Length: 141
Image (cartoon, rainbow, N blue to C red; front, side, top):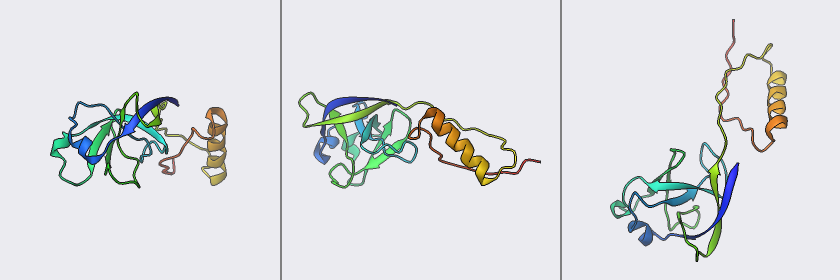
């Protein structure tokens, strides 16, 4: 995982309303696909901030995932803008590697075989790197 620390400032709702869909922002990387709390990814608003009507603001990350949040909600990660004089330093994800969807034939297909397979992948690539998002088992004739 490649990250970079940058100086930034959290945007208020009023500041978000002044943005266009071309402005580069940073939103939380703690999503359904990435699961990286405390890290942010580059993103763009899906429509101008002026079109914001009081619901959540939606941004599309550079990884093509849509994120919705309320900028002024303290319980959410918020929306950040790079700023040399910013009050905080955030960690920004530059690249996360590759997500592989694999179809594997596991002889016997029992729980022990699968556990051994996942343990070997974690040992080879790092325990924090290998994650299992979906697992579907299907018997092979």
